[in-house]
Image 1: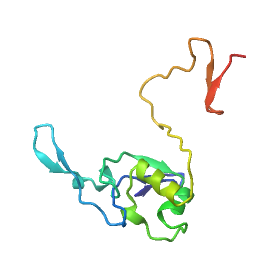
Image 2: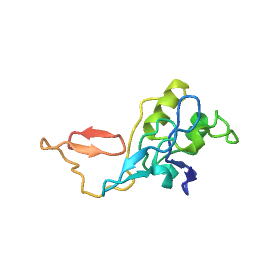
Image 3: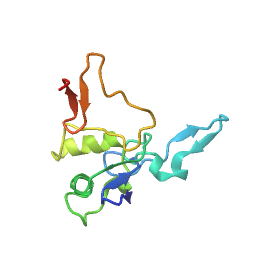
Image 4: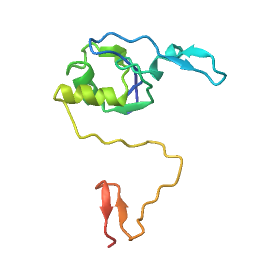
Amino acid sequence: MSTEPDGSMISGARGIEDGQENPAPATTGLAGSTTRAAADPESWCHRCGGPNRSWHVPSPLWNAVMRGGSINGEEEYSGIVCPTCFMVLAEERGVGEAWRLDARVVHVELELTTPSGRVWDAEADLWREPA
């Protein structure tokens, strides 16, 4: 688990229901050889064992879900869980729901106008009729 400049947490990990880490999953390399994802422990979720990508949530939300609500609480699953496991834990613990996923870096130009002329309003997070 690492911290972004804005204080939000970045995770990459796996685990199981009792809080114990799963061993790194075996993966097949390009040449067909079997390797361990443990080379980068943040590449797999320490709760479910599935793949994990770089992602973050605001630090207070992370603490509420992963540290029992305390900044000084001990992180479960070595502080490395996938977004899906984080959402499930947050919902099971009554911390949050109704999630939104957004990319900080987009590599393609996104279409912001529909064929009917509606325009994407990023602030409102919905399509608007043209003015």
